Length: 414
Ligand SMILES: Nc1ncnc2c1ncn2[C@@H]1O[C@H](COP(=O)(O)OP(=O)(O)OP(=O)(O)O)[C@@H](O)[C@H]1O
Ligand SMILES: [Mg+2]
Image 1 (cartoon, protein in one colour):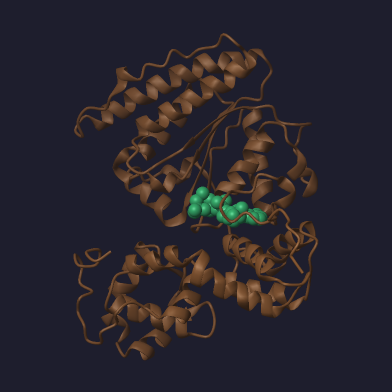
Image 2: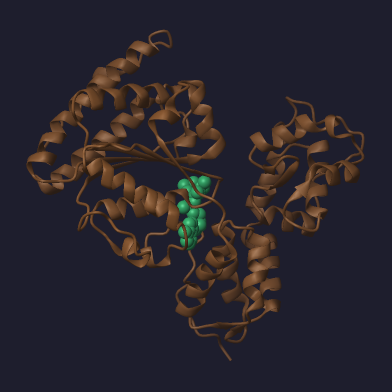
């Protein structure tokens, strides 16, 4: 019998755009709605969504944009009061990228702001001066950032008029992937000076909404210590088993598959609260299933397919980036542990070193985004599928007593 073709209801590669497919996060949605409400009422709440890699930051930021522009579906689904009928903000969006300076971000935002306003008022233009503001040398950075802030606020003032005269709630400036920006780019100083200036000049219906990976965003404080005082932090936690199950159930229902209840637990045990593996596993379970009822066997087959095929290259390069020698031994130990959260003394016994003999390796693995610290002395994989990969293929060239894990050599063979 040939299998009926259906549209894959899971989407591991893109943020959630449909509010009905957005699972959980009630508290966080309530907080971003409150920031929107406060800003509309001259009490700007600059907000930053933080969380581990792949935890759903861009998805929440995108949902905020939908809410800000009058799409009330998520608030209705979660029964959250907006405080008014619907928001009608003008919005601008910029995805930050590696090596971008504060200037790139400013121009990205202004260009998008200009085209958003044009949608309402045909003839509007900001006459952006791209060449007038090139940041010259590092020594001049402070001055340049101050110039940039002046320029940005001038442009916002031009835009602000059309906003208030036409009864818009204000302007929301979205910046995603803020973690990619280097601490020495001046971005934190930019935020600090800019939010103060907007406040001084009475432009109180403007706020920034950013998203970025927790640790990297904290590094921005190296540039300006008080950035978090000006921003409301909305941390996104792991999904609960219930929230994970809702992603699966709504997908299975959409594709018209039934399922044995234990597959929900199996996916949760492997994905440990991360939404992306839930989508990958959901999608692959539907693809390997021969009947129209999903069983634990389909879960097992899907898991193998993900690590040996669908994500094999990505997982292998994750493993290479971790470094060799002791680094691989630590990862091997973590994969051998029966459970997602691995205590340090288990690793220590497994690899035969005292904890202080590999504590630098542990911090490097955290910096390299391979593992994360869940609690004092407890670690877990950033990508939970890496554990399955190691269980299937092992780690890379472990040579015991090999000291090739010194700094400097790590990336050479990658
Ligand atoms: N609340 C949610 N309900 C259902 N699926 C979700 C939810 N949040 C995120 N996802 C899914 O998880 C995956 C990762 O989400 P997203 O891209 O938003 O994460 P991120 O934190 O921005 O990732 P990165 O750190 O790579 O920028 C996507 O496939 C997305 O559709
Ligand atoms: Mg993202």
